[in-house]
Amino acid sequence: DVQLQASGGGLVEAGGSLRLSCVVSGISFDEYAIGWFRQAPGKEREGVSCISKRDGSIYYSDSVKGRFTISSDNAKNTVYLQMNSLKPEGTAVYYCAANYPGDVVTTRLWEYDYWGQGTQVTVSS
Image 1 (cartoon, rainbow, N blue to C red):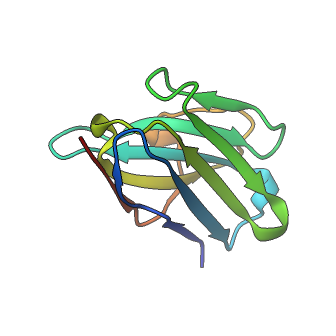
Image 2 (tube, rainbow, N blue to C red):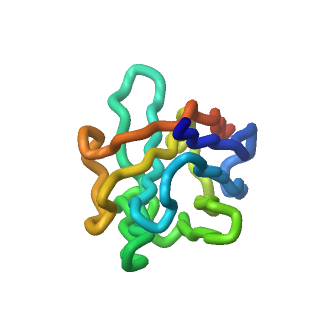
């Protein structure tokens, strides 16, 4: 079975940091792009960042550029999202997802084949 297990969410004050982890199993890690998305209450799910495991290409949305960093650990089949300088508008459920063939970084939701269950991030003001 394909599984994406997102974790690392929590409650943090504005300006604080969190690191999310996405452990991937059941697929060939190097043949996918892994994306991070978030969905705030009453809003549509939006793409935050993506990394192509094929060529290492990385994308950040304008809203997180300069504050968030995506990385991966091939030995652990894990993708991380380091989130610094968090803002209250960053409160959302954060999801990771896998896209095949992963040769283009994308945040188009319909291009993702597998999704994790989400982890809640709450940023207090």
